[in-house]
Amino acid sequence: MRPATATAAAVTTVITIGAAAAVAAGRYASDAALKAPPRRPLPSDPKVTVHATAAGRITLTRSLASLRPGTYGLKGPGVHAAVGPVVEGAERSADTVVRRLLRVSEGRLTQGTRLWLTPEVYAGNPEKALGLDFHEVLVPGELGESPAWFVPGARDTWVICVHGLGTSRAQTMNVMPFLTERRFPVLAVSYRGDEGAPRPREGLGHLGDSEWRDLDEAIGFALRGGARRVILYGWSTGATMALRCAVDSERRTRVSGLVLDSPVLDWQATLRALAAARTPAPLVPLAVRAARGRTGLDEDRTAAAAFPHRLKIPTLVLHGPGDSLAPWAVSRDMAGRRPDLISLHTVPDAPHGAMWNADPENYEEALRRFITPLM
Image: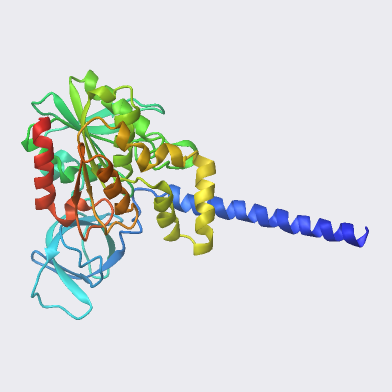
């Protein structure tokens, strides 16, 4: 082989190997972002260690997470508990914090147990956790049937609740007492990729871009069940799904309002945040490119700027600048485009999907003002 030809062949081989490695690295990194199962913590749900428990109190490792204001779940393999605010003036060491221990729903809290804070304050089902009568139902969907909880109510407007990243249907129980006290029937749905629901292609989530069609089928289920109108209430990617239904569903004329908690409106920013927590920094751009290729996510179709001018119904957005997964500024900008329809309730010091947890009282007051005219 002539020297020039050999050199060219070697360079081609190196480039080919580099391209293949880049593709493999991109797939690995996108898996870390798109295959985050609900039983694993999100990057915004750091782990804490249990140091001690006493009557109505729990001592945890002192950190930004364990010092958060509000009410949260504590979750781990086989364990679920609920904790309230920090107990001011409680005896503790310099590296610990004492919070109110509200209940232990599953398992046992022992010294040294590693858990993470989660927005899911309740465990089990609406009857076990809240004493509410409910029915376990199956909602037909594009890929098959998905389980849902139906809590009956007297009104002909149903509230369809849909969870988001890193959580399950259990998250929707945070607001069930508020909704059922106002006699709304509540349908808390699951969707492709959830436990008991159909598995999506390659096991990949699409940040709401395909999952919204399962929520659309849930609207059909509600209408067949006697609902005249529905209010869509979503957290995180569930909020994104609700927004997509409101502008793209053939049933959108039956949607009378939207409640969007921590909506994912910039999928690239959310993907970067998810990937960065589980992969080396140089792989993060590859993850975004790989995710676009594997899922068909399209910036023009999913951009927040595309939605406001198409909205025709009242919308409440609950979000805050402490969200590290879904930029709050995008929600603020979206609300600014349609002040006639979109109200923004800002929640400080709240991680992703946990606006209610950080300040339940003011959150529910904003929800009350918004939802009362829709009753």
